[in-house]
Image 1 (cartoon, one colour):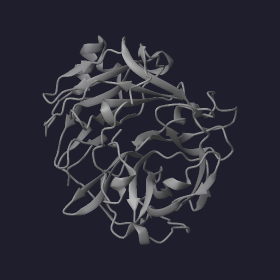
Image 2 (cartoon, helix red, strand yellow):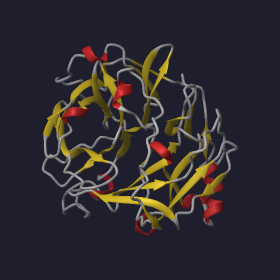
Image 3 (spheres, one colour):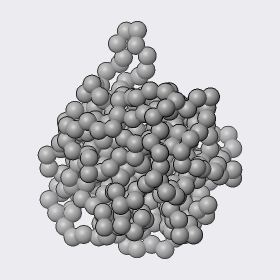
Length: 370
């Protein structure tokens, strides 16, 4: 989605940096056509390996893209990218949904997870966008891949009569990232404490059960165990390799990675409350003028540049934050970044964003990191 592959050693630098190549990660992959019911979240690992989450199947597939030639592009611009994809797919633009965006940190080419159509009959497509901005469909008819399924995903069923909400399976996987030798996964399980984080070893073997997570939600004024993480980034908090996870309405929570053990129940540390009536969409971490920042795109509060200064000493938020107020880590809203739905890092100076343009158009742009 927006995470470059990392190694735990890089956490000591306080940075998120493009990954260190390692030999043989495609060894043992089979060749053929992987099956997808959907393509939702994307994340790159080393060697041009692309991880694709399929929430309908509660599965993750690793694809060897062979996209390993170093690229030097510092800009990508594609106006009305959804219209161009619709033309490639032979359909109308209202039948194209762009689910996620990821930049290959080696080639600096962008990949989009796309749905052609809506509802149960939607067809998943993988699209690549080169520096010139022209999209192309990525053929998956004959690729090296490996696939794994989650052992305890949220049930694939409509809510019971009288219950609110939709099919919980759509939130079985809400975000993914690659870290050192694991695929990190957020989403909902079928456990009583259903909000779950997972650390799945790669290459895929046996997939362990997830870690159930509990948080204090300042805007709601209570502890919660069923609200899913919407987006997260690996980040070093002090000397503690951690995940920083954003939830709806909008707490920012730290989880130490060492605590992500199968079947465990852990409580995160809420380090910020960023305002209610808002849904986080995507998040990256980057460095500017020697300091680390989070960049968080939201449904109704724009793009936030969040300070990580002294985050290791942040007071734990465990009391209500009412009236749409904020608390904890400070942030500023990037006023010029309007309509951003997805973002990733293109390089150390530029982001790549998918943002809403005129009418129903969606544009790919590569603005300077703020």
